[in-house]
Length: 355
Image (cartoon, rainbow, N blue to C red; front, side, top):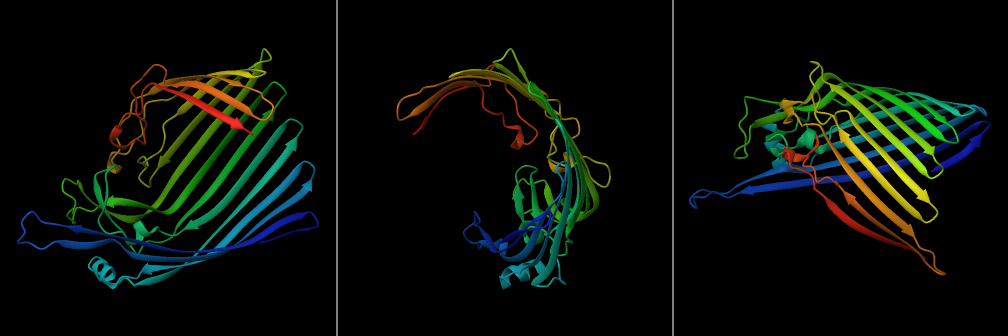
């Protein structure tokens, strides 16, 4: 790593490399002893070498304005080391090569403006990523979330994305407000799609999905945070988040959270503290049945805690007693596997000692 300063530029140059091996196999034994076991590689000894160099440069225009540029270029070589695994994948991709080279790069720029109690940020970027070992070379990997077997695709193109983001923060002695939004546009987005011409290997599976490049996809995120101090000892905090993800057919992308929120009031006076917190989300209206999702209902939970900081000569223990999901509500979120409910009412005691 090299860091230094040239005029108004503060820069850091660094290099990193890694080598990764992904190997997994499976043996299926028949009920009839007269039949032979079946063996296959689900990760056919995938080898990945990646080496890159990055530059982070911060340019101070003046006391109120700064520019920051971050860029990285990487070379990646990946492929299947196992001859057996390579021959197996060739049944689906006869023209695939055992190893392939990729060039990856990203660049991000950010402008920050400071004006008394206000901070404004605007940024943009472009980046690429290579398919993961599963996406490129996986072989009949079962995903219990959507009940499909997955097969990789070594012919996948690099996924690329263009990003734009804005942020606004207002900070006052008694309150603060921050707003932020970002938009990502993906080209050659990588995702698994059902292939009706293939039979599943896992008993009870709904079918087989093969990874492919979508023409495009997009994700929009927006959030707001507020913090208000009142009556000297009380802090009121709020957090709101909205996300929207769509594929090239304007269908919802999987694992995109519905509108979620949280609000909490904390009392802090010398060594004593108390907190009550409400968290929840709206009904998940835009869900992707194709990717194994279903509609999750709206929910909210209530948490509460009290704490006290003791002071002794050589130690400062802190004890905190709290209740999570105080109302013992039954709920699950958009990302919970098979809608398995999260824990109900939970009482805890924490003891922390600072020496």
